[in-house]
Image (cartoon, rainbow, N blue to C red; front, side):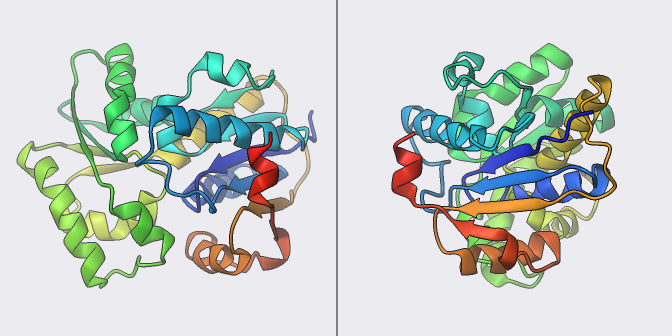
Length: 275
C-alpha cells in the first residue's frame, strides 16, 4: 500500500484524458496534474527544447513526493529517453504513452495496418515505428502529423459541428483512409477530445486508440503488481498550470465534465524554468 500521489503532466490540457481514465479505474488514488499551459504547444519545438521543458516539468512534480509518473504527452514520450529521466533523479515508475498505445493498437488491429496521428515532433522522432517493430514486427505503421489539432483543442473548438475543426480533420484523416488503416492511434493526448468527431468522419470503420487512457491502464497493472495502490475509496486530484487558471478549467470541463477551479492553481513559469 502506498498513499503517495500519482504525477501526470502534459504541455496543456491533453493529459486530462489520462486523468479521466485514472479517475475511472483508480478512484482511490491522489493525483497531481501539471499542465505547462504557458509554453504549449511542445509539438512544433526542437527536441532540445522539448527535453529541457520536460525535465523541468518532472522535477516540479518530484516536489510532491509522487510514487509514479505518467508522461501524458505524446511529444515528450517520443523524445525523452530513459537517460533523460534518470537525470531528474526520479527513481519511481515512469510511463509514457507510446508503448502502451502501440500495444493496445496491436491488440485490436484486424489486418496489422496501424496509423498514428500525432504532433510533428512525435512523427519526426520515429518512436512509434520503433515500438511497433518491438511488439509486432509484421505490422505496418502509417504516421502523419496533425499540427493544427492541439491549438484547436486548447481553444475549446471541440464541438461536433465546428466547421474549422472538421475541415482540419478532413485534411489529416484523408491519408489514413487512402492507406486503408484499420486502427488509428490518437498519438497526442489532446486528440481524444475529438474522438466522436473522428469516429463519425471515419464512419466508425477504424478502431481508435486513446493513448492517454492506454497509459493509465498500464499504470493500473503496474501499481497492482507492485502493491502500490493507496487502498482508499476516493482520492483527491490537484491541478497546477503555468497560464490562465480560468481558461484551463473552462477547457478542462470538456474532458472531465465537472468544475475543477477550486482544485487548480497557477504556478509561475519562471519558477518551473529554474528547476
